[in-house]
Image 1 (cartoon, one colour):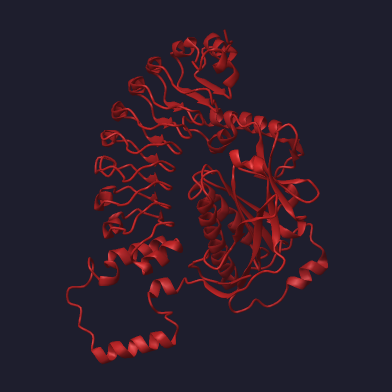
Image 2 (cartoon, helix red, strand yellow):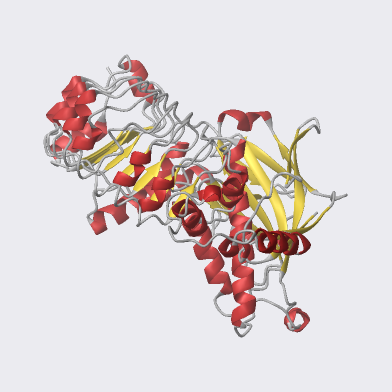
Length: 553
């Protein structure tokens, strides 16, 4: 009979929190069943069971833990949830991401205090019809399932607090106009679905700040162009006036334009290259000045062992980013964090790493290795092997959560579980066999960017899809272009790093060009036989909107 010392200790010490991770050996001994004593811990308000490939079901007895406020069952192989979960009337957070669930019990609608539901990475084709009864729901994570529509039960005026919906990588074909009923919606991600239209009623969501419809084949190509540029404000303005036809929001007393005047304007627009096509969008167009094949691109070789760990990677080189003036570096790092939190869904969909290209020794190797066998120098830490680093971070995250007395899972917990139960961890290794990146945890202090960094290696990895990597990379490059222009226009005083040489500083004190150019250079991802897997960016990858100019080669 398997022993569960954590459960015994929790009972003896009358603990309120319990975390069980990677307990496959003990589950195998007990026939895949959790210990019965677990369901007698009536004082628990936080329970996490994660990273257990042998865990395929949770018994009805879970309903006996009536004081639970957070239940995290992520990264297992659950095929169903027991109806007993509905007895947890005080539950606020339910995370069952990364399992094999094909349906959810209708009884979930009885969880009236539920504020966060995460079912990312399952096999769901529909959601419980009564979710609108969970009137305190504020965050809904549905990405990586088989949904064909957002259920009408979710698009309800009964959910005024629903602020976030992440539903990328599904099979959603239509977005109902009832989306306008979600008056508190701030973030909507429906990327990589099968949408052909976006209802103009979306513009009635007045609090909406972030939307993502990339990876859908929209009929309106002008709208698709805006979508690929991730310009939320412009998209909503376009929908508000009814798109191409004027439609909703078109002024009733509009004076009919003289045909000759219309022809004259059309000819002027043609002569100017169509720059005035949509006024508030054209102000933010990022123009690709030049595209050419890079004769000697950096290469990243991918080993077969990475396939079952974190198989997708996209890299490119960006030159021309000016990080010296004022808070330019801080703004860039803040933008990267924002992408991690929102578009990357707290690193669960993808992870970004940025490196000082001058410190990178190519060619690179993207590999999966035993956590005991590779070391890394994490950002602002000493060298440590991967297994010990993860253990250390888990302890720090748990202590942080206790100190802040929060029921929600902290940011660290959000992505640490992605490695639970993995025999090998992903890593990017340079030509000197030094690990420069350990996604989704950290990159190396060895290649850390500073104010004196003149060229960057950008890296995006994902366990979801290659398209997710490309979308995140495109958003990152666009943000860099916007920040570069902002830096130029504000003419902040240049500040050198503590480690740079005087001659480096002198070489940078040149007048900025009228239009700052970023040069994006291709990086080849190949297999161990040298066959090309990914070349980014290709001529069809970048379709950006931003306030700067970019050269691709």
